[in-house]
Length: 376
Image (cartoon, rainbow, N blue to C red; front, side, top):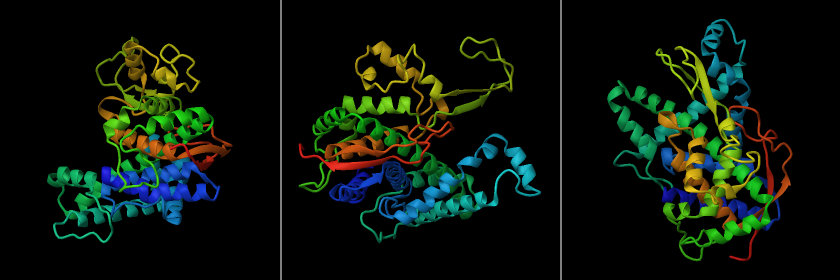
């Protein structure tokens, strides 16, 4: 994680932001954050040499991000009524256009290519053609765990690809959306940006760019020990949950009570969602207000209660498996950006979140300017 983070921050993200800052030009923070999140995710899954480089390859980035986004209007059918979609698909495409299949095929092919590259890089005699390279952490773990259940190399690779396709798709969008709303909130509060910067400069080493010495990163523990950084991120995840939509479950055959309800029979669909949980006024007073101090100026009992209702990553056996990775990645990006730059809103038209399961800005953009700071 340290090596891939160092590469993505210092050789990809920093040079891009710095070039725009030097020209006093603006850029789309949503696209930037989706790109950096995808690069982090794929580097961890497949290794740096085998993953994406969306930050530097603009055409490739826009092509694949467009493929991801283009399918959004049609996710209801496979998610909620897959049997109907399958049944009607035998005759003709009625509910979804054929280009949805084309987009899915392209994304699956791309994922399979990265899986094959990760497989090759795991061979003992493999030599990287790019520098630096890192171990395909997630790929290797999945490969080992699925080995006994696969009858062929193709079946084995397909099982891995199926798993990591979901991880890459979900991971890049959720972190990208959260970072975008974080930047939007801070861009409205110059004084808070300065406070975040002062706190980030206490890191050892600080994430200053360009680095005087060989670029290095602070430890994850040091990042987690920054209270204001943590509070502002938690409040963003609360008010602007990337996935505010329902998480449906079906009650078991034995009658079950939920939150002191009357017993529910088996087979009943129930759901909770982060949007509602995060707006309980008894737990989060003035819930529509973005107020990071609620995470700082509270008793331990109140903090425990807020954490009990905090559902940005879900909870239990099916909570987000990448929650710790996501928090580390987002904190690194935030610390990197606000140690070196201030952000300013150029165009936030349509910044309100979509009313959808996954909720990016309705306008699908947030245009910001980044300015170098001189008080480092």
